[in-house]
Amino acid sequence: MNRLSDRINALAPSATLAMSQKSSELRAQGVDVINLSVGEPDFFTPDHIKAAAKKAVDDNFSFYSPVPGYLSLLQAVSDKLRRENGLNYTTDQIVIGNGAKHELCNAIMALVNPGDEVIIPTPAWVSYVQMVNLAGGKSVLLPSSMEKNFKVTAADLEAVMTDKTRLIIVCSPSNPSGAIYNHEELKAIAEMLTRHPDVMVIADEIYEHINYVGRHESLAQFEAIKDQVVIVNGVSKSYAMTGYRIGYIAAPLWVAKAVTKMQGQYTSGVSSIAQKAAEAAYNGPQDCVEEMRIAFQRRRDLIVGLLQQIPGLELNMPDGAFYAFPRVEHYYGKRYGDTVINDDNDLALYLLNEAHVATVAGSAFCCPGYIRLSYATSDENLCEAAKRIAEALAKLS
Ligand code: PMP
Ligand code: GLU
Image 1 (cartoon, rainbow, N blue to C red):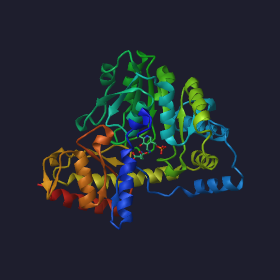
Image 2: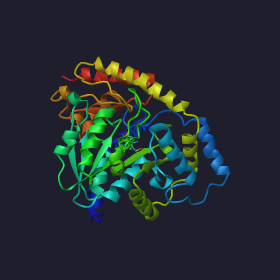
Image 3: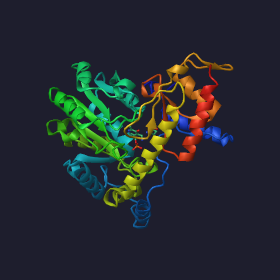
Image 4: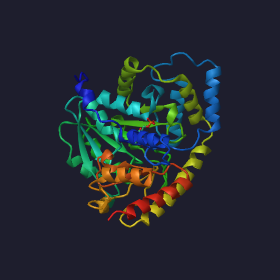
């Protein structure tokens, strides 16, 4: 008998992690899979950050840390926000969590009541809808498309608002589309939000530094709505520290306090060693961030160029993050042997089985008709993956 809660029965597993797991299993069986599914920098964590983690062990940072994080790390994040973003947040407005994912979920839990509506422009990262479900909220998906550069406007957002709207989630640079909202677009959204003072917005800025078109623009820069904004960010992508699990929110004090209360019951302060490493990341030299950004840009140009040559794949040039997001509808109805491609899930599975390239179906991002490829891997892998994809797709007729 299924004794699981309705909450867990309703929860979908993370498609990005599931696809990555599938590709690891195939690899363990000896299949030479190129994994472009999970979004994770392939670089090693920079040496000065690793040294700080080792030192933290030797300095006996082995006790419980304060629930919102060490004051020294909160100060490092506060300094980062001032230095890089021109934003003033006091240390008590910042909470450190077990990755940006944890802080996103905490913020949603703290803000959303059962029945509240949360507007999510799509394509959207896999976990937003599931987190809203966990809180008992209702996701209102607001679709965009390649023709609109995968962005929505202030007017689009306002058009789907109701008296139940509690929260909007804006991800820029976006996973999976790579779209980046520019200053004017964010300003228009901010002006619209001044008319809806009870609506909060989560600005997911985890790809802040993986930006190929200019300076990062944060929604929190607009003073009139700063108290409606919860910034989510962390070290995973910018400093190649996914396994350290350090993320944060910077938010109005009442949100930070609520998230801290929740963390106090749920997880306590996060890993002491990882916090000391993150502190070194924020306070230390920043050239590693730029070096990785340049490498990602080169890889973007490479993979997008190669994929654009494949007949039937349609894709634009993403402005940030490290994903290509081609439309694959051209292949619907085509077959190879017994395999028929009816949707993006079929195509992602076909590419895994036939080309041994792991991708993620757009449906996982509430955007059927596309697939996502992470290009956070070597040039060699990207060239080989593109070759295999081209060969496998050419077999479909
Ligand atoms: N937001 C987005 C858009 C992401 O792609 C991810 C995945 N890394 C996260 C949040 C969570 O990041 P992490 O928990 O590794 O800090
Ligand atoms: N954010 C990454 C991705 O989209 C990591 C996997 C995950 O946390 O879902 O692939």
